[in-house]
Image 1 (cartoon, rainbow, N blue to C red):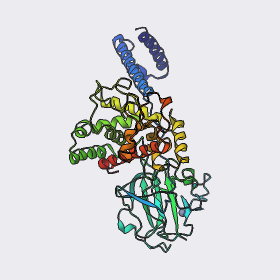
Image 2 (cartoon, protein in one colour; image 1 turned 90 degrees about the vertical axis):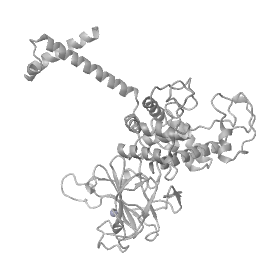
Image 3 (cartoon, rainbow, N blue to C red; image 1 turned 180 degrees about the vertical axis):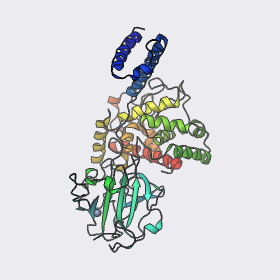
Image 4 (cartoon, rainbow, N blue to C red; image 1 turned 30 degrees about the vertical axis):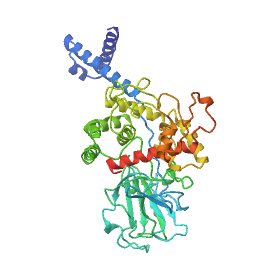
Length: 477
Ligand SMILES: [Zn+2]
């Protein structure tokens, strides 16, 4: 009550100030009508309370503001692999150089100098037209070419029918930015408008079409609008000496924090999968709540696809009945290793998703676990483990490398599962880990009973594969 009168007092002061400055304040509140003034104060007080609630919510819910948005160097490796019908360049990218830098900055003094090169040119390093894989620098939706008539201009460097860019691709990314890949080889482009492509996916080959003096790639990053004037220097975003800045696995990552799907698309795909799969748990617990999952996830800064695939990978679409609250299952809102009693208890799916986003933020760039992930990445890198099982903070593989922790010991005598041995047998075959040490003291387990760095790494890769497969099954991404 005291607090309320303090607010009243402050409002009187504010009104005094307003009355001296804006005559309209009289029109708004009649000072001779005490009831209306008090009503207005009550409204202001209520509004203030609402505002404080909002601010409180905002402060409690740590928004993840760092996304896996880094662009990859757009030139891929020679080696490729097919995954879910898409071709990915894996391994070390073909070594090429920047042959012409960005000169498209508009002269601030209006002399109009130096406005003709809005991207960088990447040389062919001795390779012919159609020999070097060009990859999507980020995941996104293709907006050009519209059809195959725009992909078959000759590799003769003569600007005839295809305009200056010749055969080219434009991809729009989740933040609205656009990447452009020009002068590609005749009939090499494998994507068209409407296709959803993943980071690292091969979209065509380097060529010599359009206005080109030699086989090369003209690469642009456009921020804000699909126009040359929105182009920025790609070398501020990509580094030829560090071509895969956020992940070591080609095409295996997707954003932890955002989706390219609109709400309508997300809901439609969820319902479609319900119909196709006939999985009751999915239909009842997830497809039915697709709109809410999308809204709460976006508001909490987590990719709604990730929420869904995590639930599928961990619980196969069932909600836990072991806990007294229904949405209290591992992966959504419960940190690794915590059961019903020590983990969070959530009364609704929405609460679980919000909690999940908070757990995830620990695993992201700037999060509490960032350094641990980086250390693990380096450790696994130097041990020569399968690259798809370890990644840097901000990536799925980076997050997963801690989140799907397999346990230091093959037989974990703790309360929450049997540890590594169970999973090693699933991954490598039943007899891989037939001897389960029965030690109860971690510090005195028999020598050789520890899971190796690469075994833990392989488990992570296995988890990622599982999630990617579920994601593909539902969303086609
Ligand atoms: Zn160029």
